[in-house]
Length: 323
Ligand SMILES: Nc1ncnc2c1ncn2[C@@H]1O[C@H](COP(=O)(O)OP(=O)(O)OP(=O)(O)O)[C@@H](O)[C@H]1O
Image 1 (cartoon, helix red, strand yellow):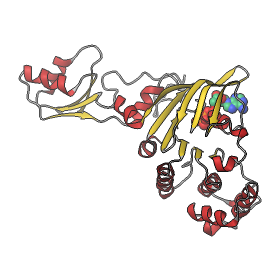
Image 2: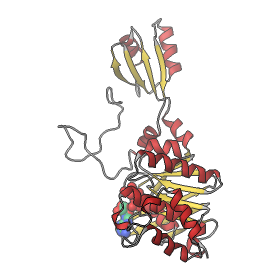
Image 3: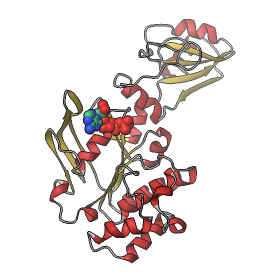
Image 4: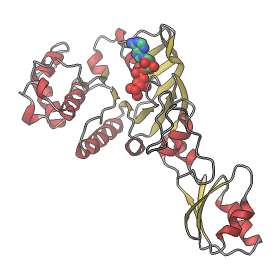
């Protein structure tokens, strides 16, 4: 279990983490999402005592990290996969880590096997690919068989097989009753992996709910309609907050209304409908709408009409802008 209360971190005038409180529960995979610079890594670093909070507290399994006598058995962390002595072999790296906790060769061989590093375990870490480095970082985190795992971008650099492997591994670890807290920018992967999600933006918590609840917020906001009288239907439904995107002849996606309201309006006007489908939202949709005001580093639109001022593009609420 990880418990943060009023956690705050300032670097000079920059507030990286701003009065953040949350609980990460055992037996679940909790995803930690947020735009670049939102404060995820800083929060994770404070959890494992690598950064000192300016205010507030954070405990892991009931105590501040530094007060654990056997930290490797309490918390396994992957924070920066490159922060490993490059001259050592993977095996020797794990041996050196294990020596601090009396962890023997049997466990080292076990984690090497679990992470698929058998064929490169005796090679120098300096020659590792990004994916192999990530696997070694995960092996290091697992070494002490910890009750809590904190993984910052664990699938970064992994191939598709590796991504699925991490998903299955963290789900298995959570099913054993461990606390698993991981960050990722891959929304589709997070949707498949996490039971619960905490979203941060500009150092503050924007959402803390089950993945299903967060996705549900974005669901049902768009309804796909096909009708031979689509243009009549658009005229009928036009109003504040309702927008339309024509997707094909006689087909339109309507945002800002519900399937029930559209169906009833069509029936009252005796308009024929061939399709009336609420379009399920995705975690990405929900994330985008939650963080749209918290993104610090905006990209321009692709193509020749890039907004060179780098200004915030308007949310997709105008006609034709939704998809
Ligand atoms: N040591 C530091 N000194 C000064 N500012 C820092 C330091 N570490 C982080 N920051 C700033 O704090 C903010 C939060 O950074 P952090 O790395 O925690 O964000 P993040 O959510 O992990 O971002 P990303 O998704 O890009 O990894 C950023 O604006 C960053 O520039």
